[in-house]
Image (cartoon, rainbow, N blue to C red; front, side, top):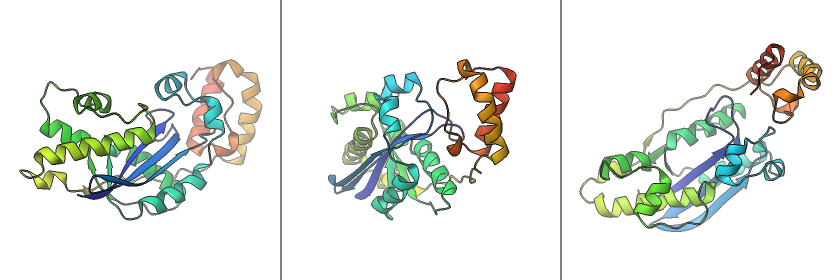
Length: 235
């Protein structure tokens, strides 16, 4: 695979049905060189957990100033076109993108290759396989760590290094395969749910790190939030 889009996302958490995209980046690679780059901060319309800010450097202020996902996602799709995708633990990021596509009623079906799987196949067992460790192993410096653009490029360079050392002996390992991830569209919160939350939220400000945007909640998110407020449970 000599031409592909290396992708990476930052999210508010690890749960595709509950958490939200904060940043989307992609790097168009051809023959080991960067052709073009795409990157955008996304407004998640929710509180950014402190641990995510510590990890990524993305603050609540930065997130609140981000673009709407509905505006970013079509541009991202235009950028990647029909290129195969590449990423580190690719299915994780892909699941968030597939959910965004399902919510927007857009088709999303790609082939791709996972550098985490390649690292597990070709590197010594004792070598840690997370992207931060692989940067050190391959002496890769792409700037910021846990920011989508830098991590997407780092994954591309990991792929290029592994392909250079093992591609001649096992070329099939470096070919993209269809990614089997499908998501159902998340329904928006109903009017009665939003009205109930509007009544409950002012009564329990101590239970939430920030006030959610009721116009951007899914039906399941609203249901969980209502239950939490009625039972007096924290986040």
